Image (cartoon, rainbow, N blue to C red; front, side, top):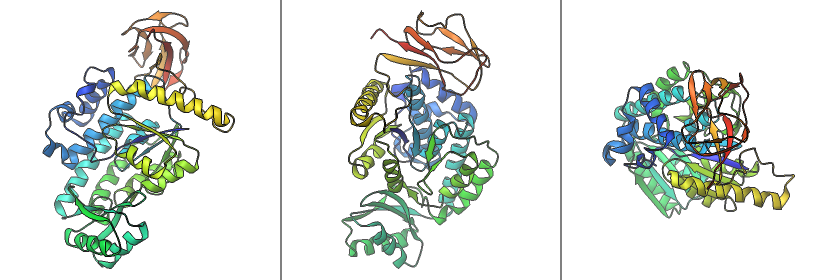
Length: 399
């Protein structure tokens, strides 16, 4: 089975949106800019490293980039059985699973970044990576400081991040080395994220969370706070509220996904940090990442190969969701929004269509094909209520 994963703050890079400017999915950048009243296009194209690294910029830029990549992948018909995101990436996972509307998600991410920036400005804090030490020994190193030092991220075996006040963190790093850590090094971050020092940000963010509608997840979302799969809409507000002051249990999340039968991990968004962590924690898993449009065909080949491998091993025991078997010559046209689908005259099985052809409308918005090919199947009926990015038609291209 396939899980889509989404990176968090720290994966951003200057110019990371450049490869997507001419792709149809770039329209999400404009939607996000309208929702937040911020110039996100400039963030993704022209902002230099120092400014992009600021929490309020890094989080928004990373989230929107992941959503652009997800939208592009969804247009091919590739699907996942579950979603998981590291810290900020959990918001991407919730939007991908249909729990949050895109506009609500981007507003929450914007508020989260502002709230964490403000908390970091008020309280001096930082983070450090501890390498080559067991989790419980890292916890002991923090406890021995008798101060403000806590585990913030369980990333992978032998890789734990701690957070706290600078002096206390230095003492925890020294103790970790005494306990046998191979390395203990400060990270270049703007605050003590996922620690009690983020309590002011948690309280501010909770007010924004309470104003947003959460829906039942279309696929399971594995959450940072408890490393468990969730689908109930009532679970997510408390989990997001607790996330800011709780450790990210990413190692435990990867273990839970492995236990639940997931064999292919696909990272969507800037960087390949999560792909590297999968390599360390789930050694037998298939893994790939998508950062640019050029990598989408490689993704489809990987997913097709995953299906073939699963079928050969045990077809009955390894269910594959519709859409995961699509090859590089097959594409999906998806809905641009949630609402009632009205079938157009140009949407019929067997018909050839071109790029830009309108297949129908959803709440007055055109459903436009980004590809040229033959319609192999119409997947939504006239008058059906569809969700955003729901497949409308299946195409076979000529290449």
